Image (cartoon, rainbow, N blue to C red; front, side):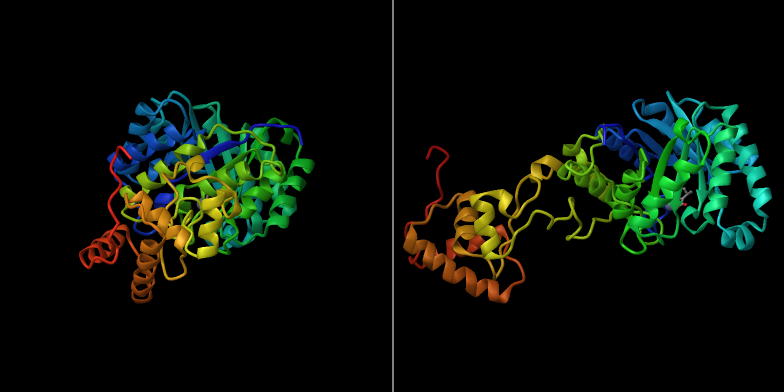
Amino acid sequence: MAQDRLLFFDTTLRDGEQSPGCSMTQHEKLLMAHSLEDLGVDILEAGFAISSDGDFAAIQAVSKEIRKPRITSLARARTEDIERAAAALEHAERSRIHIFLASSDIHLQYKLKISREEALEQAAKSVALARTYVDDVEFSPEDSTRTDIDFLCRIVSVAIEAGATTINMPDTVGYSVPNEYGAMFRTVRERVPGADKVIFSSHCHDDLGLAVANSLAAIEGGARQVECTINGIGERAGNAALEEIAAALSVRRDQYTVEHNLKLEQLYAASQQLAQVISFAPSPNKAIVGSNAFAHEAGIHQHGVLSNPLTYEIMTPASVGVPANRMVLGKHSGRHALRSRLHDLGYQLGASDLEAAYRAFTELADKKKAIYDQDLINLVAHHKRHEDLISAEPISEAS
Ligand code: KIV
Ligand code: ZN
């Protein structure tokens, strides 16, 4: 596959904000928007302008302050939504209106209570109206993955004819699986006239834990925009995690030859900024940014990583901005890891002292889930007092 460009569309401030407990004030959205700009996202969905005055003001503030990414607001396929989105985006250097309209029969029948023909009409009218305000319009047939494929092609075709520049096909309920999601992109791109003139986009939810895998499959199917959120926050089980897609593309560049604008070494900072803003850290075992993502507890792993990090690490912590390799010491840890951590803490132990320290350490590790640096300092200090670690002197700066 020839190298081509993949756009990162971040929706932390819109779909991400829809997770329970993750709503953000205008000030918080601005803090986060700066982090996302530093990270290099291409499109930043700042909110849903018509949903509240607060969201409108936040989109306006982000539009005024954030210059590099294109700023977008979500809108339903309704005149009042589109006008409100356009007004909120007025000061943006570059803007996009993102229109969504359900296309699956279950949504048309039970949620919107309109026919397929009415949906086609609304799609055409709303995209054409949005184009009178901005030259960049994204159209999302909501619940694409549960939409009859012939109708999906029709609605996408109508949206392109009306002037849509990006077609996003969301897996709204996280129902799809990778081969099916990738195939949907191939089919629509093959069948719809004008498909080569627009950018196709993925938008995946994680109800089956497949959001990132599905996003990667969409890229293989020809999507050149991925919609995602920091730490994977979002409706229900969340959205595809931006940091996981970015790291997968980087670590497995043998499989994915797309280029993008993200600065991977800013991933951890963006994740930490979000955790601070929403007072909600990613789970410790969360890939890339969780506190255990680069932690090695088992002795064999620790020994391997100390000899050569590539034994158990597929990327360096530094490559995604994680400060340093933080080994977690516990009852499975070995002497190598203990010696290394004691060295980091400033203690250089001879063989017999290390042996004594290791015995004391394993006794403690049997009683505690994890051993922290302060535990080790206490342990060395205790043994020093009892003179069984007689040469355990902190290393001076000069040595
Ligand atoms: O999940 C979804 O379908 C959405 C749309 C509004 C794009 O978030
Ligand atoms: Zn969504």
